[in-house]
Length: 151
Image (cartoon, rainbow, N blue to C red):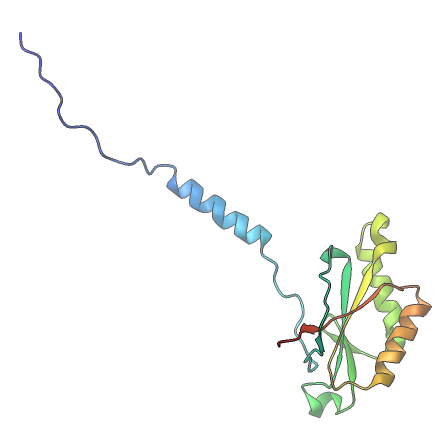
């Protein structure tokens, strides 16, 4: 009796796990991607700075935008304050800070940092009003956002 040798080796690559891998990657990117949560309603060209420090824990940062409104027919030409998707006045900032603190875990509430993204053409009086309101509500960690100076 003669034995037959199998001379052809299988060159197929198993692809049965490929859809699982693709879906795992898809879910990973869906979970880790951060979407922009607010639409900017004020002009915001940041001033240049020579020395910048990157924020460590962005979950503790709440943003306040200050600048001239983009929709001048609706909001006028004066410098406005925007938080989240709402234009507010300076007297509403303490309520905004309290709402932001309420969203945080209790241990992190004292570590909240307010980041002011101020347009380079904004009036200093409005910025002064914002910082005074932040002092009243004991939000003393204030960061002024800037763009890196191009040399």
